[in-house]
Length: 430
Length: 112
Image (cartoon, rainbow over all chains, first blue to last red):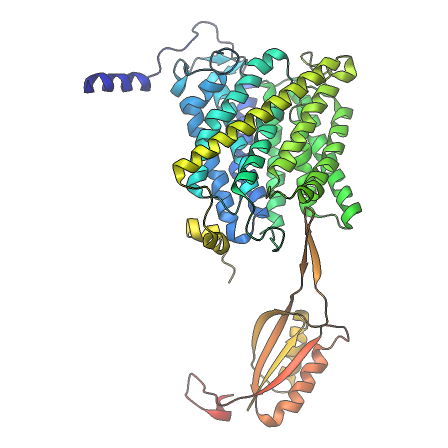
């Protein structure tokens, strides 16, 4: 019996022969670009997002926010290579999931090709998306979640929530078959993470003193730096989603920057008008809102459309976090739902409006004579939101069971998680 | 011996220090403090969350002097720290029971 198990384990560890011998379809230009794009997207999580979120956290919790973000990337990396890629991109089963054929990269070798790039590279590019998506979720519940709970949650969430949605949209699942357009992750990343964040915020509850105590960001400087790194990395995120170094990638690059810039300005002007002061936090947030909104549309829309998308994103994002959130009273601390969820929805809808065959033959939106696309987008948005809401709730309850509670105790929350959980200090300013 | 505690606006510290040096006061201790009186605080906004910051940063200068010098020292501080605007600060005079120089063990007026 022991010998059987040993042999079985060894078989699991040795991938057997790669899929294709013969002519290599690898394009070196595409491959070089995609290696760079993958590295750029990687930077977005432990650097860009960690700083963006960390700077907005209170000083006593800055390191904890950083830790949760950093560890999310590490967990995403591991889970993806173990079974995540397989679930998302394995051979389709009933339009729902990819199955376990490629667990631990079984069946994939050095010679394997996906499109015009090595399969390993495709796997890694997609992995960086899984990592950042789960990291985005934590924005809603900073300052109060147990670290152990977050670790367990991330493993389960990537597996059971991220991978299915990725499969539906990009892995040949039912949304892809339905014709939903999501170039770089409006559904898979932003709506998914945003709605999940809201669920966490509602279940874990508000921070102690929310609405009464002042909760100053530790450093708007760090947040602005983080936003700039995210912007840079997002070129890899959006332009890289073309999976090739071609005209569509360049177009995606162009509209991504434009949307971000316009949204940063429109958020800034909205804030200047309503609050009398243009804040740096507003500039940084606006840029991110613009980047979120252009994400599903990047490879489908033209320049003028990207300006409209950015303009609306900035104002809508500003409204969501500065007005709507306070009216509705939930503590989505760093606005994962307000920015990623809401602007993700706008982006997905905008894709249904502005997708033009002049940029990408795959997409035709309402303004180009295809009103049906908008309906498809709406269905995909609602389906993602519902699945994520319910699924995240289940995963959260399971996590609570496994880690005996999700929230740190009151004393720890007041003392600060950097000290209570990590035994560290973010700054030594004396 | 008396202790003089002067709460002043932080940017006035250099002026006060030089003015005191000029009349022969060669040492002092300063503390970074926060406070408010008639000077109002300011508002900060973070994504629509508005916070009123009541406490304003100030500097407290502490010096121990001979009782005969109190009048002169307080006048000098007041003149150097004055801007004519609300929030200039306050000066308090307190009695001191004793003083010791750590290096030599000298006590009383020899210690200050």
